[in-house]
Image (cartoon, rainbow over all chains, first blue to last red):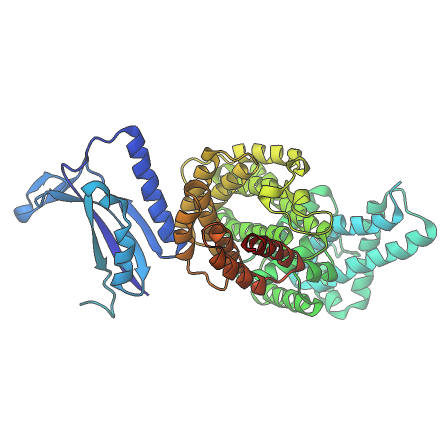
Length: 119
Length: 419
């Protein structure tokens, strides 16, 4: 089986004001989604959410700016690592990601490079 | 005065482990066979002598005295044993005449702890660890072990042989691991004791009393561990040991309600909660509080929390939402097919059967008895034909009369609806 990173992107102004109940729902949806992946024995690494406050980005000439990097009006929110027979399997997993609810974000699916698979 | 019939088996359970541990502590783990022979002979003498002359006032003291004598006699008759031990004694100055056998409570406890860590050693295959623990730490007979584990005496003897060979070949020391090694070694011990408990709890063996004894023995050993950790003040670093103990208490509390008088399995929802052992639940609650972790939740914490929710039979929305959340966390921590199936069931209790079918089917556990049993349940009411297929599949996979009875009942109920 191969391993894939699912990278979560959100738009900077996509963080709509969610009511506490909606926030709770969103959290539950995430836990259920990740729990479901784990239940299918497809979760390799629960990954991390990536923080916003206190983040920076370093560009050319070692120029430092306040992060996250949002030149494309989106920034990376977090990632997990899953496994599957093919990228299509990973894509099917990604389709259920709660970040896609309400137009909030995107999921990028990238195969992990290994010595025998480094295209 | 206790019934003589029960006294010796009871003492055997209590004292076998202590005596073998002390002997091994004194003469080395590689002498374990000799140690077991000495203790067995001791109990044989007890059976013969007490039958004729009556039970002594202090049976345990009598056993220890005879064990001591048998050890000395063993020295006289067993060449290897003698060479090894005499070799030792000769080098002592002044040379001892007889080996000292320290049967004080402190040494007994220390020896048993050392034995616990030696038996639950990562270089011994897990199956063998469990069998050896049952034999040497809990004093169950080969027969009893074979019966509960639903295998043959020959198989158990093979496992015991392999385990002892490893003890010898890997030179596993009979010492308590030092602080750096303790954490890792403790992990192995906990897994073995968890498995030991499960052997008792989930065993399909018809001997209910024996299976309960397995559970109680596992609990006794974990409790034993907590006392040791408390003494060395290492317990604050390992709250998961208390979590495991809490888990075992909660599970064991339902033991009497799980089997009907005629030996049928009673599902959780149908159990008579008045048969649940409230004292065990309360003790479990106490241990659960002591297990309050500061951050990292171990799998035992999560399982104990799930088990805690199950000590409340009333079904309210909060219960199953919490159980689902806990199964999510548990699976993210560590995958297991049973946890995955239990999660799907919890999912059905929160979101309804039809939504849960998708979750359950994506588990890809075709060929697993519980998978088909669950789908049989989930499809009942929405697609009885599919439900029937799965229940029949499950029936074909079931291994015990109790399981088959349960599944047949459900199939019959389905077929009755169809008519």
